[in-house]
Image (cartoon, rainbow, N blue to C red; front, side, top):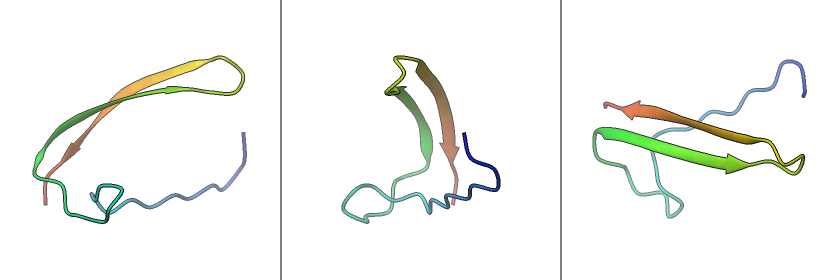
Length: 44
């Protein structure tokens, strides 16, 4: 964990294309083995 961490994301895919308005779900497995899941709503 790091204090004052900022990571801005502008609603683009890995090829820098704009994503359509939608709800996107994510799953991440961390090096520690912990799993993180959630969602983000993109509305531009």
